[in-house]
Length: 199
Image 1: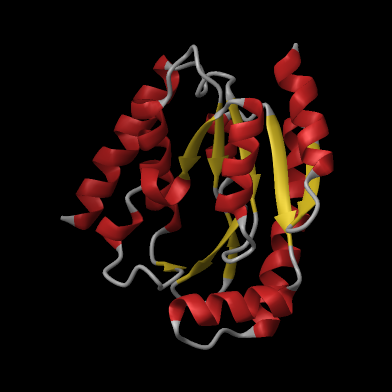
Image 2: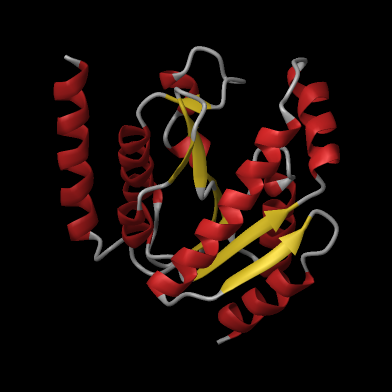
């Protein structure tokens, strides 16, 4: 039953993506590991540049497919990405510009770091790729305080390195500029985005 449901969802996603010409060209993608402060930074950028904020977790309705919202492991990465694309096709409006807060990599059910499929990014068709990096010790403390459970610092470090490496790879593959910011300095992101949206 779950397999059939996933197949139907994937089929719907691809039909909708075709109708929207590869998700239009009005999405700025911002990635980074959990706890790095993406949501706060995205909202700051949205306020300054007047963009609409979208959260990948909310679009794919993470709480509906994971009973423990604090569990970051993903059982079926391709299906969650289909849900993300479906959520985008149902929410994106042609005359608006958006920031999508998401990830370049995820943890699968075996606790292994897996890249988000290239096909997902091709369908999103981002006009800008961005990543937020942070101090792993600070991120670990923030996550443990928020979720009231321990986090593996080495895994967080490898996750951040994997996100950065894959973001660089995507930038070359898609021909889209990658901007790198930190928790405390997003000047590069803002400068680049101002140029994009002032044209």
